[in-house]
Image 1 (cartoon, rainbow, N blue to C red):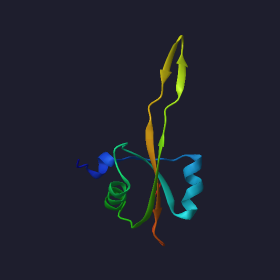
Image 2: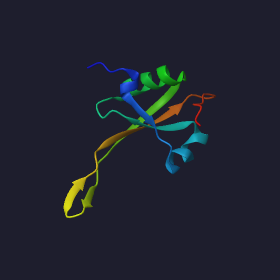
Image 3: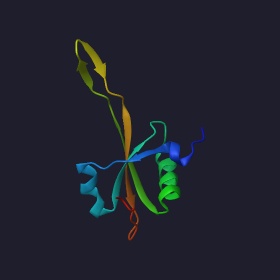
Length: 93
């Protein structure tokens, strides 16, 4: 199954956890659940024009939420922690 780079990388996450990673040249991305590490690496290199050293992924399960008198569920999602090579940086605003 072939993906486009913008289909794989959904968003660059800007959270408290992700800002803790930035001095270590690590960035947190929300990615497609079906994408593997090799596809994520190629997509980040193509979109942001940087060299990737490593990719670590984790699948986060959705939580049960109570909405009025019904039970609901937040969706499952996949995150990727991308480590860049020495001297590389992604410009974030």
